[in-house]
Length: 399
Image (cartoon, rainbow, N blue to C red; front, top):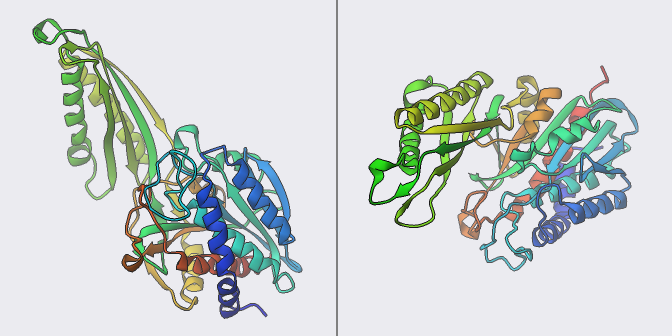
């Protein structure tokens, strides 16, 4: 009979496997929609566990399907596979071998933990009800290209059989090692990007009065956009507008013709997202017009708000609290974004975090840092939690 203790014990027995798989993937990171070697490794590991495998799903995605011995609900568990375009400076002996590519967000850990959960569940099919789908998704980091969740959904991963519950887990350095963090309702933000091209009139740096200086106008636009959060949005509704890139000019005595701004916007509801986008456009155009310049504004909404189903999340919290050696806490929402939000638009479920901050082991750097490290001692907890959630929720009677 499967129990929380049994699942955790099985995860502990798999600890060497979890670490080895995670390090192998970490050493060989691949960028969004290029996860071919990673996908092949995942498919091989699932097959070894006796799990039916589908490959090239929504690009480089892999789906494993495990059927229990009795009828029940269908549960999907998701892990993302892509790395980031970042040079690793962690100093780990198993650091990335790929120049300028690094698993700096923990996706290597997500793959290892989901493979561990798959192995645990595959050894417990006699008591497993329903069906479990293991979704190994490409391109979570590729928001500018729409991410990898939507193509997998379009490819039918939530159908045949229809998924009743979906869960995702993310390593996060914000929280202490061994702690689970979650909340009902919005847990992560809607994200969008904007590009502003400012068209002025160039000339000699000694005669700015004969030009329309796009660098000066760009600085005014940057300053004006800060008023969105401070003066134009409801202060109790979280939002962020950040200009993260400015490019213009070629040398020190030439006023250029153009300047380019790029940035990101984050909100916790769709209405705020539309308002922020509208304000960015209006402010950029009016500021440019004031100083005699023109502008082109391009705004793209990337990922929607990640919203956890309240009833499901209450049950998830109960399951997580049963895992010995861990702590479960409800946390405020974060303004990071995730394309797991697309899954939650289709199916009730929960996205939750597993803390990996451990000062003693030097695991203190934030996700997306070139020095990011994880406490590998938490991998067993992640694997056990995913297996438990699949077991608990697939055990419900098919509606």
